[in-house]
Length: 249
Ligand SMILES: Nc1ncnc2c1ncn2[C@@H]1O[C@H](COP(=O)(O)OP(=O)(O)OP(=O)(O)O)[C@@H](O)[C@H]1O
Ligand SMILES: [Mg+2]
Image (cartoon, rainbow, N blue to C red):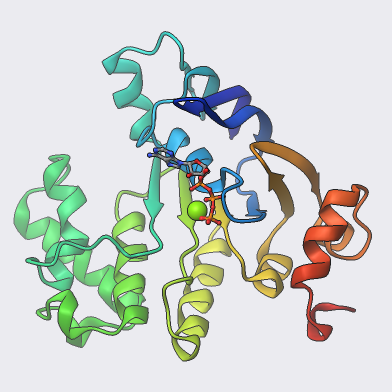
């Protein structure tokens, strides 16, 4: 369960999150859509403390953190509750596919090397890339790199997985494999927030969709509601720019 209350974040004079309130249930898949610059990445980064929000509270599972007074220990606890999948994969270039997936288990001292290797191998199998275990990222396609990015996020079995436009950097023909994997992960009863511009995917995979604009949550609803009958004019206008005929029932 994630509970975000009145979360605010500014970069100098630019207020990027203007008091975000959002609750997400256990095992819920929530997509976040919205125009560029609306604060979607900043929201995810604040949940994972890659950015430190100025104020507001974040609860993930049993850890509740007040951002205006959070100390190192609070931050450490809440960071351990989520992992992030990045648009540009963020793999270690000097590590192989297998080593990239093992990394969180080693760095967090969760398993000794030999066991970490076994677990990482099982994830490589799961994503269908066992035969690439000794390849470096530069020898892999974007889609393969992102599947490794997802395996790396899964290996710690986190409470929450945060996806920030996981397919935006991929060539169109590589998108579907990655979306298929995310859908598979979603079906394993996990709590996920997916920032995406893939509207058909958001509609297909999500329990709820959040439309964000200019640092605010404008509207939250079921995919049917948001994509066919949004309440807010701003949501309608945004979708009018995106919706293609195949997305309309
Ligand atoms: N580290 C930073 N320093 C200064 N400004 C930042 C920083 N990160 C984000 N911003 C600003 O915050 C605003 C929101 O950015 P953010 O990346 O969260 O938007 P977004 O909704 O993810 O956009 P996109 O769809 O293009 O990824 C933008 O105006 C951006 O320039
Ligand atoms: Mg972004």
